[in-house]
Length: 79
Image (cartoon, rainbow, N blue to C red; front, side, top):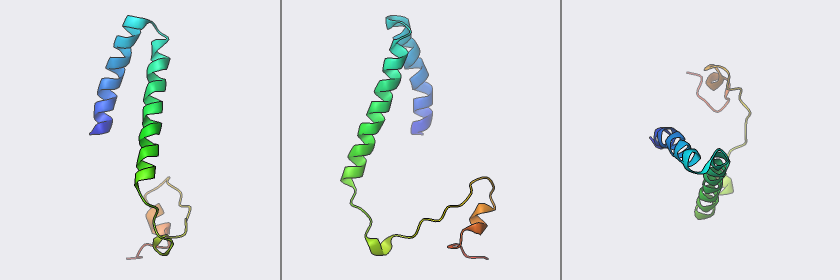
């Protein structure tokens, strides 16, 4: 839902800013969105405590090219 909102409002807001302040405002808008996202991520990372070591699992690289990849994951039940 948030993605849909951003995909709808973002281009509209960018075009209004470009009409008012010129084409270079597009880069300022994109930079503001990227910095806002980075600040949001940093705040979320700092809020959440790390997962205890006994609850962590080893990373297993699985290709994401086909739905059969789930079957290749050794942690899944074969049935």
